Image (cartoon, rainbow, N blue to C red; front, side):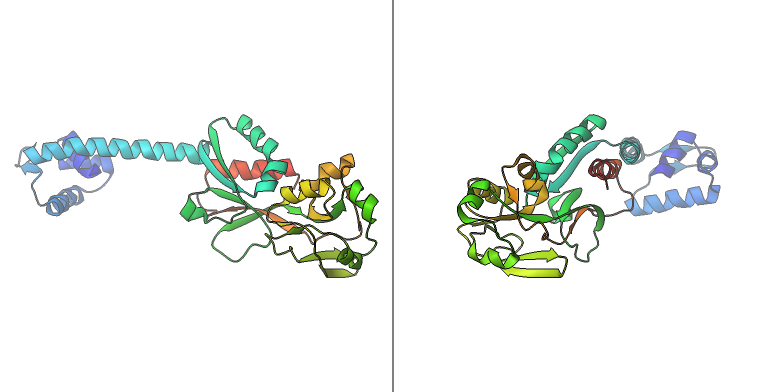
Length: 288
């Protein structure tokens, strides 16, 4: 198509060949193949000049439009690779997004005003390709896949309870004491019936039971604040409550193993500027 436009604009195969830096024979052969592909003649050829057939004139006009659209699309794509812009779709675990990333996300949009963030807060592990996401923030071990997973931090859970609960029931002194307490089970990671603790002597699995089980850490946090039981949740959920005394850490020598925090995206090749800058911004803000 580009060859055909060059021939028409130049008025000859020789002019088109010079413009595109190929031989005249190659230029003529490409036009011949194009006509064979279309099943119609585009050019009337004489020894002295070329002229357009009616079909050739219509094809020329459409070709100019298409080439212009392609060049514009290439220019836009190149700009998006170099300069962060466009819509960035990100899926983030619900509680982590609310407690840890809301301010960071707002700061990113101020630093990169040409990027519009479309955030989905969900604990469901979506298919990035099928669901149309550019990036996912995920907590936990990353299974083998074609996705790129860049570690941007770590998460640990701690054991805590409200002062009112501890005043009524006392504080457990060892992990084994948890069996005699009301414990709030988090079902999304399978810890609704057991807590996996880690201490100086290594890992320990502790059976627990209690009045409430849920698949959302914030619901369990509110239950713990009301004195309903003992909580085992990430520090990003309970940290502010610990610092203000609304919750009290117990069994301080025990916590969960560290779970990796990852930025996950489909490919490192031709990574868009909006994804690259967002991940780099998270790394800087989280102090990795």
